Amino acid sequence: MSQHRVARAAVFSAGSWGTAIAKILADSGTDVIAHARRDEIADAINTQHRNPSYFPDIELPAALTATTDPAAALDGADFLVLSIPAQTLRTNLAAWAPHIGDGTVIVSLMKGIEQSSGQRASQIITDVTGVSADRVAVLSGPNLAREIMEGHPAAATVACLDEDAAHRFQKACHTGYFRPYTSTDVTGCELGGAVKNVIALAVGIATGMGLGNNATAMLITRGLAETTRLATAMGAHPATLAGLSGLGDLVATCSSPLSRNRTFGTHLGRGLSVEEATAATRQTTEGVKSAEAILALAHAHDVEMPITEVISALLHEKVTLAQAAAALMQRPPKPER
Ligand SMILES: NC(=O)C1=CN([C@@H]2O[C@H](COP(=O)(O)OP(=O)(O)OC[C@H]3O[C@@H](n4cnc5c(N)ncnc54)[C@H](O)[C@@H]3O)[C@@H](O)[C@H]2O)C=CC1
Ligand SMILES: O=C(CO)COP(=O)(O)O
Image (cartoon, rainbow, N blue to C red; front, side, top):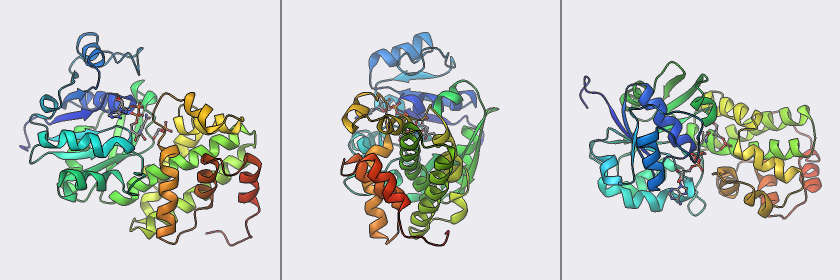
């Protein structure tokens, strides 16, 4: 890519985070096109500068356009930004892959682990497309989409094995309200994002049960400990888990009623069944789909993840709320690490 040409990005798809990153990229001066699945969403973005399904109240930049044609979206793209449910990535990407250019950097925004393989999104991307790992980046951090759409400040980490590619995407999405940092720790960045969703389910459950702020702080802190144990066992740098994509995202997600994972947990904590909580949830809730796969990674790497274990059991309705709380509190006493 020439240093002087405006970068071009294709964002797949126009859900909550996809729409928000498309706005960020457009506001940063990047030439951006969103791929929507539905004609009416693409039409509304092109003609009314709105996404009626996700942010009907917020005007989008006039420079942001949309299409339902993947080939048109990917034509000449420097960046393919992927923001769809992690469990659907493999199938969708296989269909889009023939349109991806040789030099396109693929950026994952997804915070989930594939149930069937235990793979992170970046691994699925290299698997499906055959691109080298240094052409795959991850953007992750405390980035509740609605806050960003409203123009509130936020920061995130862009991780890529190729630092130059990370810098190019950093430049493409840096605005007055969005501050990206770079990293080369793709594994740490992705695991921080995926596991925090499971911890947010736990915090939501505790909130729904009315267990208080001490319980919330305990779950966040011990949740970070088990996330760090898993991530470092899988090759991540511990500092990544203390950064924006680790602690930062954990705190934002566990604190905010905007989080779908925390909200799902709150429903469970108030006594809804998993089926009822699922019916009450319209948007992607990655922790529900990823908890078991994360636990399988923990077992494979011989790492203890008691919170993830209890949440996975609760999601399979193998334990009651009271049994789940007791299982965490009555574990054998141990040193803090
Ligand atoms: N919403 C947020 O604040 C943030 C979300 N994320 C992550 O971004 C990813 C996407 O989440 P959201 O945009 O929030 O979800 P969403 O539910 O708002 O949007 C999902 C998007 O994927 C599309 N989609 C749904 N099912 C599909 C399928 N089977 N095939 C193809 N496309 C499909 C939808 O049409 C929509 O465009 C998730 O991994 C999430 O963890 C990351 C940071 C912030
Ligand atoms: O990842 C997020 C914020 O960084 C969004 O969290 P939820 O998917 O729980 O809404």
